[in-house]
Length: 249
Image (cartoon, rainbow, N blue to C red; front, side):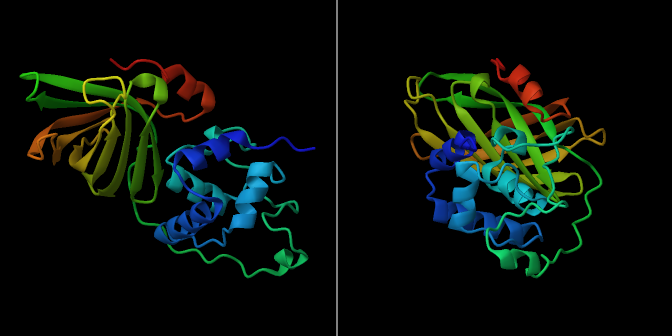
């Protein structure tokens, strides 16, 4: 009997999504990256039950876009190098016999991006606390995934007491997007959720991005400050992420 994929289920429930919600998010992600898919609730059920050990690449890429995590952390079997096992030898993500006759998924020409940013980065930003009358720095190790011109970064849970996510778009050397941070429930901000915008300039080496964030404070004033991402490792394997899943301070 196949072992259930508890990792994928934990990620989905952590995002507060039903299986239907998750399937719709996968379809939307497929359209955004130019690879439409037919994800549905039944498919999500089969992944979580372990009936399907590895999704086809079109679904793997959508899973990474939706969760912001590499496929190696989603409980699926993968071949060396982090690539998800393909279905060239008869495996399918659908149960119906007609799946062999399904219309091939159309693909569009990928957006030209001349630099790969995928890997582990150190995220570091500065902010002023009016309540404490001093400036502080927030630091996280984040795993950054790239799909065309879109970048998603999610903090490794052991790297800080808060959790951080970034959703970015690359346009040449300019990286623009949004950030969300869920603060430590036992910390000064008592689990408050903050969010805002960010714009960075990537250095030609592709090993550092620097710019500024903007967002609201606890008194509903608009604040800003410096933010940088510094490259650490190109690998997103489980072993690498385990190594960086430690305090970034």
